[in-house]
Every structure is written in C-alpha cells, then in structure tokens.
Image (cartoon, rainbow, N blue to C red; front, side):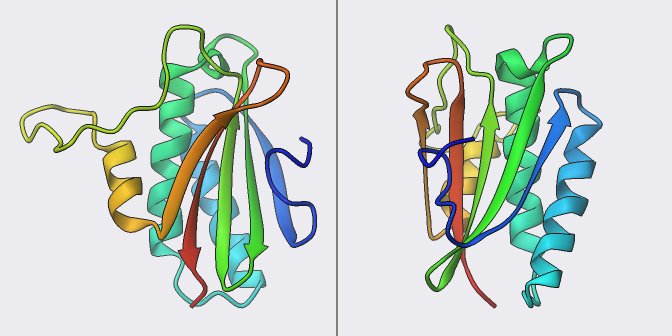
Length: 141
C-alpha cells in the first residue's frame, strides 16, 4: 500500500483479509477495535460502511477470486476518520451509485449508503492499474 491509498501520517491501522464473504465481519471487528483504541466513541457508521465496501470488493472485484485479498486501512484525517478498502480491481466493473436504490432489489444499496452517510467518499484506481481504492470519511466522535 502506497501513499496513493491512504496518507501514511495518521495511519491508525491496516489489515489484509482474504477475499471471501466471511471477511466482512472480520473487517467490521477490526475497524471497531482500531477506532475504539483511538478514542472514537461511536463506531456504528464506520462498521456499516466498511461492511458494504468489503462486501462489494469481494463480490465485484478480482479480490473475490480464489486467493484474492482485500485491505482495510484506517487513518486520522484532520477532524475526520478516513477508511479505505483496497481491492484487486476489475476490468469490467467500476463503482457506481444509483440515484435511488431499488426498494425491491436484494442488493445495490452499498455505495448509495456510503454516499448518504459519509462526510465524503470517493474511489480511484492505483497507478499500477491492478488495485482499486474506495474510501470514505466520517467525523470523529
């Protein structure tokens, strides 16, 4: 992970997880632990949003293939916390947010939730072209 993914200054923690559905709960626990250890009182929104992003990474990127991996990084970012989920990218699928989620659909709400709950969010491809970073920021509480 380089400077293009999360500023090294302020890095609170980083974990590499297997690209499997079971890693969603591991990511939630990891983020809760890191944030609580840094003095953050309310971790609910961070846990919810990291769950959505890790789930998307496993489902829609190369991270979900056998041997794939997802990285979660947590950092201080001024008065905010920035959480980045780094996956192995996809040649056929890019993050996109529906204007409104389909109420009858079983999925498709992840990035919509991120957009609605986070102070800010975004994504970019790493310079190598082989990894993708999706990040969000939440106020410190």
